[in-house]
Amino acid sequence: MELDYYEVLEITKTADNETIKKAYRRLALKYHPDRNAGDKEAEDKFKLVNEAYQVLSDENKRSIYDRHGKAGLDGGLGGGFDFDIGDIFSSFFGESFGGRSRRRGNGEKYPLDLEIGLSIDFHEAAFGCEKEVEYTKKVPCHTCDGTGSKDGKKSTCHHCGGSGRITQSNGFMSIVQECPYCNGTGEIIKDKCPTCSGLGYEEERHSLKVNIPEGIDSGMRLRISGKGNVGKSGNTGELYVVVEVREDEHFIRHNNDVYVEIPVFFTQAALGESISVPTLRGKTELKLPVGTVDKQRFVFEKEGIKSVNSSRIGNLIVQVSVQMPNKLSQEQEELLKKLQDSFGIKGGEAAEECKGIFDKIKAWLKSE
Image (cartoon, rainbow, N blue to C red):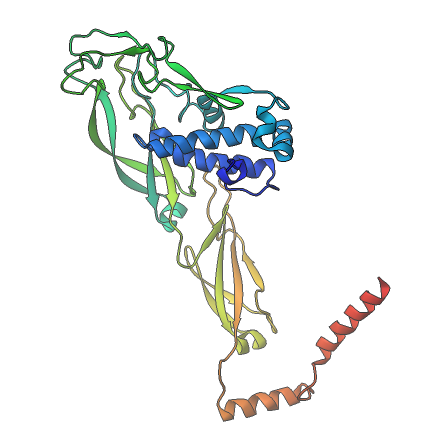
């Protein structure tokens, strides 16, 4: 069965370029080797995601693929091509994560920059906080001084010929990637260091306090200078903290605006009563207009979340959910019938306002 690039990226065939980019970004992060060390299945999926993106992000290749499938590209209609996984990935995520441009330094066995995740509560993100994070970073092995070799000797990697990169052909496509045998260094070790097993590094556990700015949102990163991995040369990378904000039980965030739904009994809506509504900073009063309808919205300016990049504060949007009774007592039923009669509404007939709406619809249909 032929591989479907749309299924690989988990998108439909009508997806636009922005949807394709978002799907690639999400899946590439999910399956990136740095996040799935030693996981062969994740590595294979990462390659497929890059392969699918390389085709579907190119208008000409996508057109050929849609008409003729992968065989069309392989058969010369679109021509074969090479691409570097690292180049594609770094074009999306910058030099701080993935790809050859990630700050590895001369002769380093691992990237110097380090990324960790941090989950915080909704209100912590809205108002800022201080969190202590624990993480593991790499430092050069003290026994072999970061060489990975027991006697300090190395030889040229015969898999990549010392280039640090290998090319794998996959039909019409050639994938260039870091050599997995020498980890991109171009050199291999015959007699490994007994302390680090040839890795050239040890891992240390660290903790530090991080100031979370007011208004931060999921997916945003904090850069902490000089707290990343330590290289053999003595250079230290950056630590990137990727924030994930947990959902709140009542509030929903959209950019810097906050939404909340408030249940209102139908009599309160009809009478136009004042009700108390929760805000991020406490409570406020909402004066309902007489005859408030279900899903009606009310805006409270500057009661949302402060922008992390400016002094602007979003709004609080309160949406009313009009609640109707599930059952009525005999007394309640009689009272409602009297109220209905007082409005001149006859039982079994539509209200005049509704009839007016239907008349307008009929007139509109006749004019078409």
